[in-house]
Amino acid sequence: MLALGNWRKSTRSQTATACIEVGQAPGHVGIRDTKDRAGGTLVVDRVAFGAFLTAVKADRLG
Image (cartoon, rainbow, N blue to C red):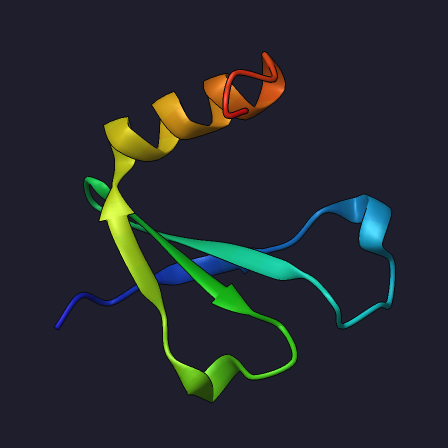
């Protein structure tokens, strides 16, 4: 099992819990729901996550 750490969420979400947060592990990124942190974590390759973020920022997911 991967040890994910340094969990963080957007500063724009302030104290809201309707968010996701991301954590880091060597070569991987973890994504989880702030409302249910124990509910599971999606772990993806760091390069794939970077490509996903680039596509979101460029509005290319449509």
